[in-house]
Amino acid sequence: MRACGSGPREGTPVSKLLVIVLAMSAGGLVALQGVVNSQLGKVLSHPLQAALLSFAVGWLGLFLATLMFGTGLPSLVQLATLPSRLWLGGLLGAAFITATILLIPKIGVANMLVAAVAGQVVVALVLDHYGVLGALQQSITLTRALGTILVITGLVIINQ
Image 1: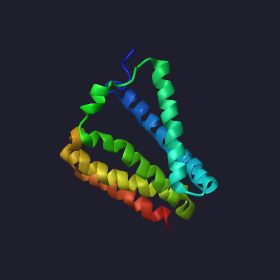
Image 2: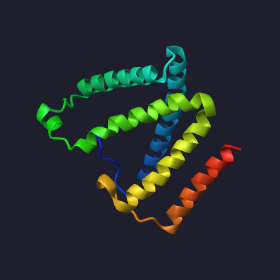
Image 3: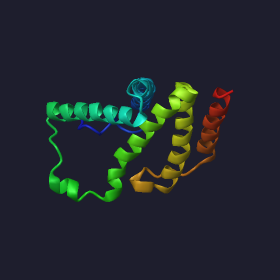
C-alpha cells in the first residue's frame, strides 16, 4: 500500500482516469461546501463568523483524522522552521471560503464556482509554466492555452 500523498503511477491511463474522477468528486464537494457555508452565513448573519465556524469544524475533523490514522502532529521545531510562505495556504483557503459565502447568494453556486475554476485555471497555467513554489513545470502550450480559453468561454456562456 502506498503512503498517503503518493498516488497511482503516472502515465497509466486507468490511474489517470481514477485521479480525474477523484478530482471531479472533490470539486462536487466544493460546490456542496459553498451552499452549506452560504446558508451558514445567512444564519449567523456574518460571513466571517460562518468562515470561522467552517474552519473550526474542518480543523476538528482533521485533528481527529490525524489521531485516528496515527500520523502524529508536527513538532514545534518543524512548525518553527517552516518557510513563512507555507503558512499562506490557510489564509488563502480562508479568503476563498469567505468569498464563496459572500458571492453565492449574489450570483449562485454555478456562476461562483465556474468563475472560481476559471481563475484557478488561469493562475495554475502560470504557476505550472514557471514552476512556482515547486509546482510541476509544464510549459504553456497551444493546447493548454486553448483549454483555458474554453474554460473562460464557459464562464461567459454560463453567465448569460
